[in-house]
Image 1 (tube, rainbow, N blue to C red):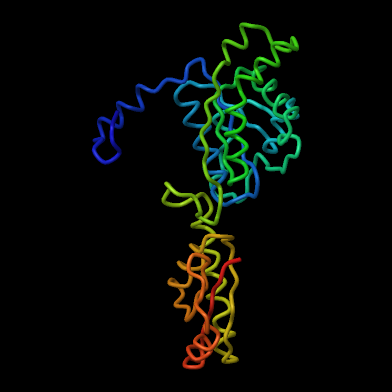
Image 2: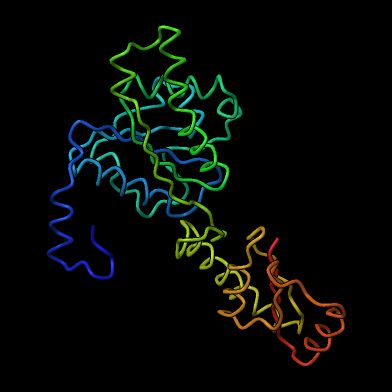
Length: 267
């Protein structure tokens, strides 16, 4: 095994040359809220999979498409992902899926994957999407046993698809996942925040007003903190460091010292 810090260019080239996906099938889906960069991730999965000789499938409309099967699961070609790098959202669709939360729904999803010999799944989504993927992986063996008992698959298919491998790619503008430098969508969200600040700053200057800007982030203050630093805000609220008692007076005193301000806090 090579460490990312020590692998030389020739070693990296050799590593990719030795990769082989011959005889394997990979499916990629996007689930939950869309995030800028999802299409780039989908494109990378498809083209890398084809490059190593694997068969790659799109699963349209997230987990709902995996449960419904049929035309929602289609083989992807090299040209299928052309001209999508710059497109926002997700071109293969995303949908909330109540069916996948049930055992019956996951059983249908497993059957649809086994029919296509898909044993490698790439899930691009947030916390709920990746939690669902992990549960699906944990139940995979028992789902195959149930399909076998019901006569929906034969013993050979069960053996051929005995293991399910899952790769999770975090699609979340909140940047709230440990172990990764930046989640998919974070950089674009930060860029949009700065654009908005630039746009409203002239109005703040014209009317000598204090503007409060509320940004996304849920329980993570990354977007609020970094955008506050980038635009020079005078006050910021982040959930990781709740304000101390008496913050109202301190903030008002601080803001009264300047005429053009912008304050951030996430929700």
